[in-house]
Length: 176
Image (cartoon, rainbow, N blue to C red; front, side, top):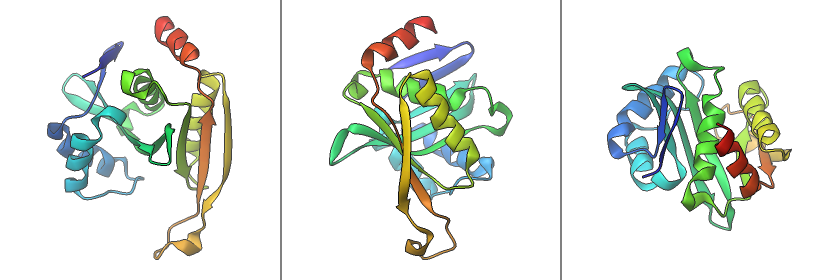
């Protein structure tokens, strides 16, 4: 299990014991779609290599769930990313993604993708900051129009950050 620290934060792979805390974190953000508690247990158990938690002491303050795309294994798709409301604006979300990208399992990753609804300015800024930090570009395009959803969901646009240089990641890690 790869761990790293950023001042008083501990970044590591999630365990199934983290699942209930992740569910509560997602619920407490008040803005993310809350999946079943069971899904977070599964996520923390089966996707440890591509997901991460951030703890400050014994409090979970951040979580990112991601996976490699089956048809593009060099692309990390970020499913959800959450920061505890008391910790927002401190760069934890960006650090979580950077932590993932430095793990040995994630060395082949060249792009990071996510879908973002048009009103989610915080997520757009996060991926814009990630591209800036990694000295690479960001592109977006429509992916899922609201007409595809059976409920009142907004459009989801695809955002793609990259190409990502492993050399740049190493430089970033050394300067932290």
